[in-house]
Length: 347
Ligand SMILES: [Zn+2]
Image (cartoon, rainbow, N blue to C red; front, top):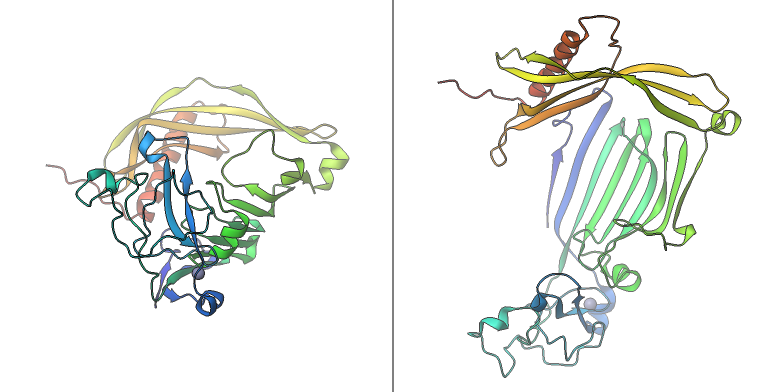
């Protein structure tokens, strides 16, 4: 077993965050008490998919029905002979089955009958991970996720306490009994929990994490307002009242580089049905080519091409495009400082 931790606060220093760290424990021995006592329970595992090339749509291998451990090699069985979930009664020798040979290129394809599973691993291990934030976090709520057959994280959970902090935990390999009992097939992880955001409380009950459909039952997810103003004054609606043209401007960075941008202002009104309206201006700048703020070895220099939410600039001042270009330069300069950006050498 080995452990390590990563300081996440270095990425985005925030004085309101006292600690932001990830902790990992790798190669943690799995207990699997029942399997140690009774032996593993081999069943046929795999998938039937509607997508991809014909020969990759179905696959079969062997796993323990209780703990999810796979033999090594996991085997490659014929989908025509073995059904998903069926107890596996064949040999566990890891040998190529008759009729195919290791030289047969097809034998490597997952849907072709090819290889019996090998022996069970001696010392199965898993990974435990956690991320702890003390100080400001962005979430209030709690949830637990049960992964699907293809998930790297078998189980994950999170509790967010807003200004106090948040804790995330996850497992790899641990908890496969739960996953195999409650979410054995398909590629949808399931989430149960609640969150509070901008006066709304939302919940999820065994809801699919990555998809939503009209046929989902009503109890699966929902939300209601816990803001008393919503019930007294009606729901809050935002609408755009007016906007300016997009005006060209130039962002001059302290490093000497300049960038052409388009700036514009939008006037928005926010009001509740029986409340007073409030209007405000919000500004946007956009740079088609992007302004580099971060060096990347593998994907070029990351760019920051647009920013929202600059308030307090109004078209009353005829120099508003210049003010906005200066604000864009400030945003990008802060980002460059945060990412320790190095400007390219000029020849
Ligand atoms: Zn087992």
